[in-house]
Image (cartoon, rainbow, N blue to C red; front, side, top):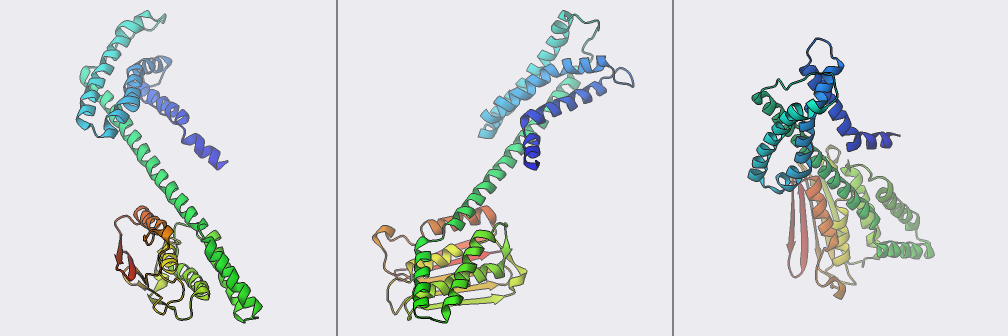
Length: 337
């Protein structure tokens, strides 16, 4: 019901009639010949609105989209002045030519002088322009938010199937060997999937929950890594003081394990550190493992581009995202101010 109501309220078929009804009432009251509004006052106001209709809809349908929103400001201003004078001409035409042709018993003349008329037309021009631009800005923000939501939902659904397959294989191996780690590992995978699917609907989550999810992911990745692989995860600062966009760090960690820890290597490592002091600093570095032909030597790929896009949409100029790459090492530093 609320969605239907919101849809109706935001519809131009509702907003425009409401605007014009209120406008006719205000104009009728402004030009009323007595202390009480009569039918003749509304009739006069209706005739008065004929050039206003022309002014507003030429401005909305032609001048704003064709000139103002395309940055042609001088041309828009020139045409807007011409439009005001066109509306003035229609005003005179309405009362001098159209009104005498109507079979009405009222005798009306336009008793509004040029300066007042031009001022009224200018007010309507500016008002409708501001309303149009504000609505366009609102729609742009809504589109950006929807795009962000889509990207976030897409990110949530991009749980690497190879990771799930390998995790389940590792759990299967633990179960066969009747390892005491089996139950704990299943719980880690369950908590990770629950977080990704159900607990990231909000714009921001507690930093501690985000790090708990990463810890579960790292523990699962350790199961399929060589025993010589070095994985460190250090945290410093007061986590309770911060909230963050969900799954923001996940692609960075996933990228490190995907590209760094490959095969059996004594030099394989992933070092992660987070400092929560006067902002959030997240640093992750890893060795560069063997690059598959499909990867074409490009570390990060879609995952890093997704992070960059989300950072731009969510944090704007309040973040720094640095990538350092050498022949043997890949390092990413994300700072949220």
